[in-house]
Image (cartoon, rainbow, N blue to C red; front, top):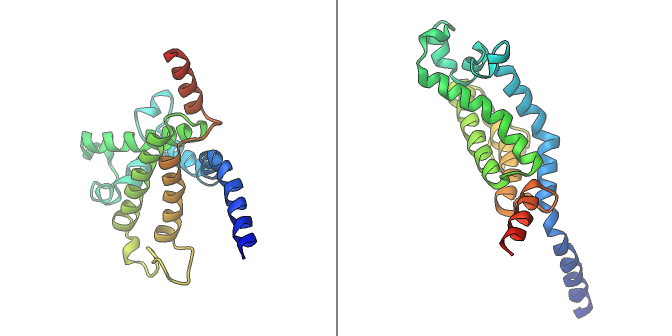
Length: 187
């Protein structure tokens, strides 16, 4: 029995040495699963032309403020400047935060921002787009159905981001290079 315990401990110690790559693995999973999703969504929210970065599309307002847009007859001119600021911030967040995570720059902060984004996105889907009134629209944890859009999928998304908040980007990242550069300047 002691040999079995020793073998398990040796295996655990060996696996622990690979712990530094957990951040890299979480970033790779994020890139494989969510980068394209968020970039496509962010790019779809941009307005026409070069200034589209500062003039979101009508669809951007409709996605982020569905009820306000419906009440305004889909006329963005009837919305406030605050609506525009929120839409711009959301659009830029969808483009910038995933990029920062994938390249490993300010990873912990970017992952924390993405967690907030996913929570706001989920609240908008539940209350703004009416998923709470659809049967099974929100889903539930600890049920036998693992594919609900909000409860199941978004929990897994947030978990990948929490790993990055706690562990950081790992050694193959710009964060690691910046830290090495800063340490070398201190010496």
